[in-house]
Image 1 (cartoon, helix red, strand yellow):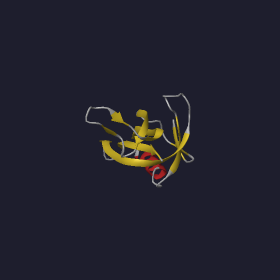
Image 2 (spheres, helix red, strand yellow; image 1 turned 90 degrees about the horizontal axis):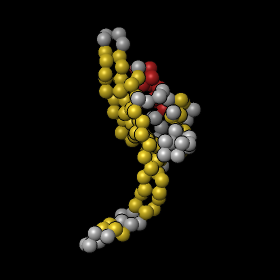
Image 3 (spheres, rainbow, N blue to C red; image 1 turned 180 degrees about the vertical axis):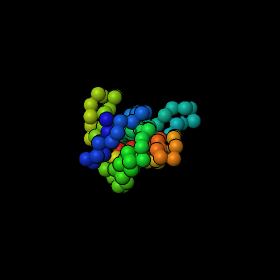
Image 4 (tube, rainbow, N blue to C red; image 1 turned 30 degrees about the vertical axis):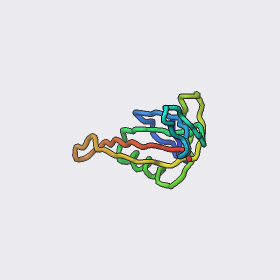
Length: 115
């Protein structure tokens, strides 16, 4: 479902794709509530993904997301296509979900944001 560079990531347990518009600082509402909009870019992708993974899979994902910029090929449910976009990783959150002394299971959540 998600490939970062040449690394195929495990399938996430949660996955959402958002297309957002970016407005300039000149976008604001008037005193009467009308919007004066100055959209500078439309259709910017943001992917929110969550994985439940082993420590080895966690290392694979975090290594793929380490560069400041990378290409991402992903499934876009808004268009049923597989675009490739230049992205960066937003905040990454890791939570330990299971540990028994020998095995562990991690939940990793990340935002991937188009440049």
